[in-house]
Length: 288
Image 1: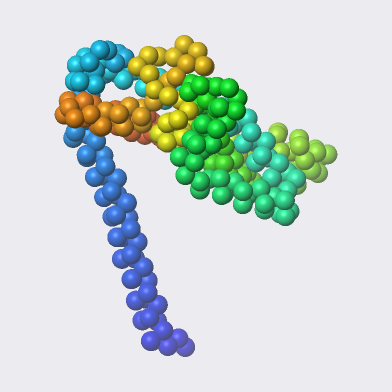
Image 2 (image 1 turned 90 degrees about the vertical axis):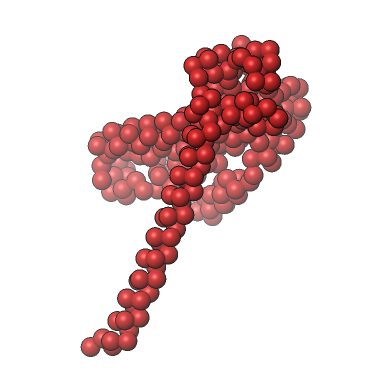
């Protein structure tokens, strides 16, 4: 028979952890709500159609006409290019870890290296990207920013894909081997299709990190009020636009900075909801 004291102790512990979980949830939800309230209350009044559809004109940073279309398109160009390059390397890495180095020492080293790269501050990637840019004979440009963002996103995407692919049902893999498929064929034709919703989520996670990062492109992408027409031209981005607008002493321009932050937040929200919707849609065809 169980001791009443042990029974009470376990229920007291459960109650304590419930309270801690409630406060943790309240802290996260409260922080998110406070951030959204600050951005919306200060930026919504400055968010106009001209701001979305025009580039900065003369005197924009003094409170005159213009918009941040250059930064909006620049952020999309940078994040899309960096995500595409990171995908070309991340998916083969994740498939290699699953097919050939599942529990090997070499696989553990690769995973540890990716974890370390994931934790490196983005400003370090910016400094490394700047050195790489000089070594390649490039100037601050869209291409240099894309390469730097690709380096930043690669460990995020590869590690996320690796975690997703490890959840592939072992029976499905063994069934593929049983009909004579090789490891490579199983990885490409079975595992990739099976875990496609999770792979898509990993891609969108990296894209969201890329579109919102400022430090990694500070030295490599440069900044301009124009929309780039070449990979070798400098490009603006929303995070840097927010930084520069907040640094001005003009209240009108500072309000536009919060409007730019609102635009960036909406982008991230759309990406998150879109990836979840697409993953749920594809998940209907996944073998559980």
